[in-house]
Length: 47
Length: 292
Image (cartoon, rainbow over all chains, first blue to last red; front, side, top):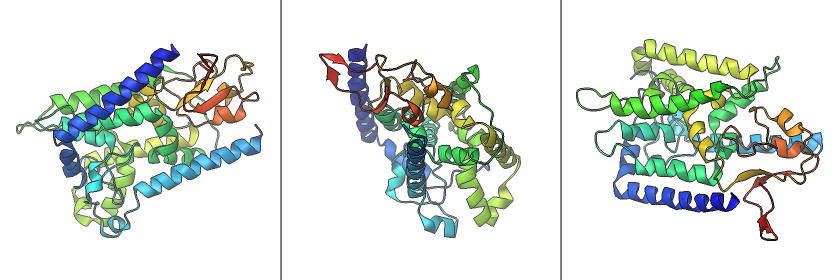
């Protein structure tokens, strides 16, 4: 069980890092940036 | 472990939570001018629930960012945001909730107000946060779209009390045009925030336990994260102190990797035989892991 968990831990870490890299390649940080640098009207109960 | 050292450990955690919460929201210009930070650091998500429309915020909220990408027509599933959340989760699990979340700190401070406390053990209400995640964070932003094909961040819009506290209240206090635009939705969110804060005085972290979608995600990583709470079954004397001290309704001696555990470390401090350990996986003894 512990070995399975250790393996999963490594696999999940690698998959997560890969997803971040692929997301950066797809330009997704720009979408996040555009949302985050403007006041989110929904967040403040107006939108 | 003595009561005084356990108390010192609690103070240490509060200090970490305070430094992280203030540090993440320390752009004073925003609070002075009623604006949000527009620098490139906003493209990076912070680990905890921290509204990116807080005037002092340097980073982005992971749940808000996840919905921001869901609501766009292209690239509906954000590999970047999902990957960042998974990275935080696989590194720390719900340690993020216990140590790095500003809204968790707010609830803990409210719980310190002298009052009669209500202890809630394991309850099915804990599954509510998974429903919030599935419906409000994922399904509705993807499925419900306007004529232009753009959806809404329904969790932020209808529920998030962190957004109301950290963003709505300071921005509306500073900006008359925003105040004039506030209507029934703002009143509703104010009621959600007031209800959450009032409940937090009597119940330990009610929002984290029953509602928070980010806690729901991190909880799924608790069994596999690098940082682990572990119990040495050979050393444990089953005295039950750890379960009694846990305010999240977990029995750490039986289920140290419970999705409900926020890795606050209170159980580690009260264990009389040092059977519990919080940290990276223990080194192996004689080819076998030292702890479960």
